[in-house]
Image 1 (tube, rainbow, N blue to C red):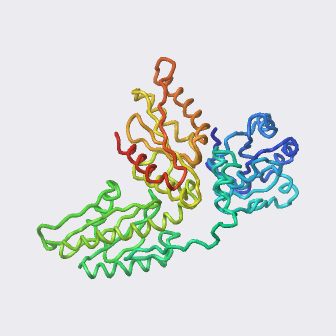
Image 2 (image 1 turned 60 degrees about the vertical axis):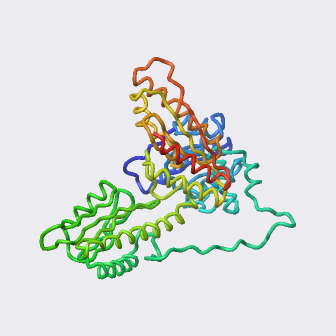
Image 3 (image 1 turned 120 degrees about the vertical axis):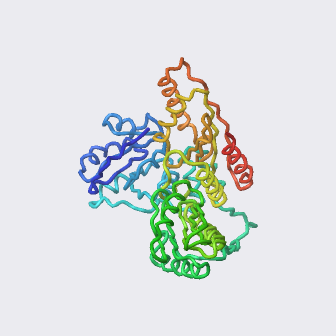
Length: 444
């Protein structure tokens, strides 16, 4: 299902989601709905026959039986029934989403309605990862909790594993939370000054930021119109742009703009008037060093929370972006065992129907899903959780395909969708998972 968020939101009204209400909780719904400072955006339950979902339907409130729908809108607070049989896994999902939770009774008894930003059950991170997976539709909680809990046998190792230091040579940045911060900018400008002096360049620029929103973060030397044009071209084509002056007063000098991309960011390093022209290779090496440094930081920030990454790219991903998500999935699985699957979906050779499906599908996905279209009739879908977590989404996909088939005026029934999948259940699957998924990405 899809819940719509108004384009303009009244900050005074808190967006609330209700989870697993029983009849005792449902009696509190009228009191909740009368409170002017809140807006009940969604009601989630285990099935359509539960008290909460039945009362929600009578009140005209949006409801769902798929907990993964909690990832499709930002909620200010979740009210979770104190008697919910799956409270641990629900709070595991809420913890990953950064959504505070409370019981409906405590919320109504609290004049401020502040709730709590801590889970009701303190647990190791691996336990919350297991709960998160169950919330997405994975195995029964008892099974994955048993696998997630530490080994408490008498002969179990108690000494922590040593931490292996990591690092790269070259330009190092202390903090990239703001990519970069004002302190980073000074360090970058210092590094650029040294490189400008070493290569005889007259102008240097570094553009960086989130995908689609790059800004100048460091610059040295006077403005250079030629360099600006190369930067724009490098951004548009996502390819390095290097030229050499063959005649005139600046004969033998070079201008270049080198785009780079990390897990979460994009950037362009550019230099103009490089003398001698062969000095551009030094700038190219610096680009790779910056990319490696910032990508390392991006992965450190994104992998623990993946598939809930900050500012995720919505809709269809390019193959390189999808490949980066696959690598994050492997790192997350290695960290706490959260499982993933890649589905290769094949469709009939009816371009009109496939195009309609591609237009409709992004709005029906969860924020935890990633999609890519490597060829006209093939889609790749990365999902979190065990294979059973795909069931809700598979039903939506089938319904959308039926709609797309009818819109293309094709005779019923719709052609079947082929579905192959690769699962990542543990570190031992990582190499085969990446190899097979990347092969699917490359086959046209």
